[in-house]
Image (cartoon, rainbow, N blue to C red):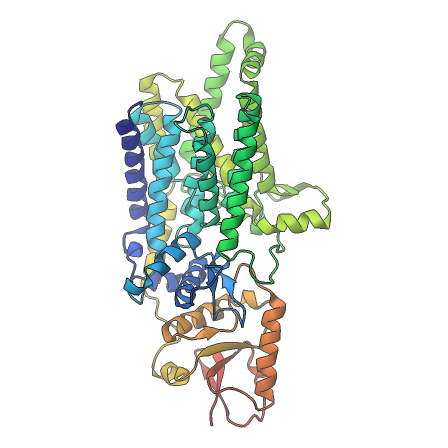
Length: 554
């Protein structure tokens, strides 16, 4: 594919395949901007993301531009920490005056992601083999990437594996001659900034790939200056983007506990965790759902085929397997080293310092508290397994291109059919989920709630326990009420928050209430009914829909 038209066609076919796959799996209804029913019915991460968007949309413009007001005591918090897709949140807030009141973009984001996953997957494969049939069929493996499949409708921002694919394309293009020499620097910088405005977890994955790119630049292309400029530019502008969106605003900690818990098991490539039709669930630890990296039965068969193909081709040459392998490694030493370093960095980071195989902890690498706390910034390290997954898939497809054209076509078609068939059980689970979601009724609704919330401007949760984030159902129920009634929230489920600020705010409101200084414009929600203050004049307490709430009346 040398013509621009062929390159565009390659991308478009992959994008169409990705978008069609999305609609088949998740339906077209969730794409509708006015359909927020599925979001609140999920009672999941996507609910948090949408609530963050609604509050961000209602907040006044400030600098940093991504700050949300009215969702975390008196503090503003960045929409980055509600995972509200800052890239879309800022764009659609600019359009807010012409948008309907009830508006969501997470379904739209999902279909765009799948289109880009398929499109960039096809472009990546075009760097391996310039054949439209090969790139089109192969793009299915990126569109139907298992880890992404489990993120959509839950944690949509993490569906953007096209960011990793774009980094891999730039790396393979390290020798490409551009019209302007600084073009690769701009592309890497734009990619990193975009990743920061989508989800921070893509940053370490992209930088791992960039490490391989810089190894190739320095040791093969002899362009140390270009490598340094690429790194500095990407880092500087990424930090600026995070600052502009409010990522450094506030007093909350960037680190959180859990590093080593939300990791990847060494069986990640083979463990379907019960979602697949053709493979059984392997043992793993409870938090390792974050390290879900199942390749799918079709891709696993291709991996097996690729191994046989390598052994056969290398062994059949004069000199034997070991000698020929050594010669290949010598001829491609820099490329092999770059690949191995990037793969190892991604896999070991995903595995964390606690190495696990099935239900066995093989060993734990002791690390200083300072290091653990910094690694805790990306505590769900298991997600980084997606990079080794994509590298393994791409390497496998490259090896398979050594087959003759007919054998390659047949093996690819069979593998794709098995890959998609393996998803039947998950597809059935999604349809059962659709039935459940269709029966969802807004919990805190009706005449009683209308009367109770009349004149209330804020929902205050009292007293605030240290484990308040575990009260997901309560927070999502009252967040939906706050969205519908245009009320503020004293606290909410956020990725980064300063508990001491929230606790002090809750204590202040609780003490005021106990001392007869409660406010009439607040709706008080109690985690436990026994915490309701006794003998407070004007305080009317209600038990509604399993919740204990109160208002101060004259």
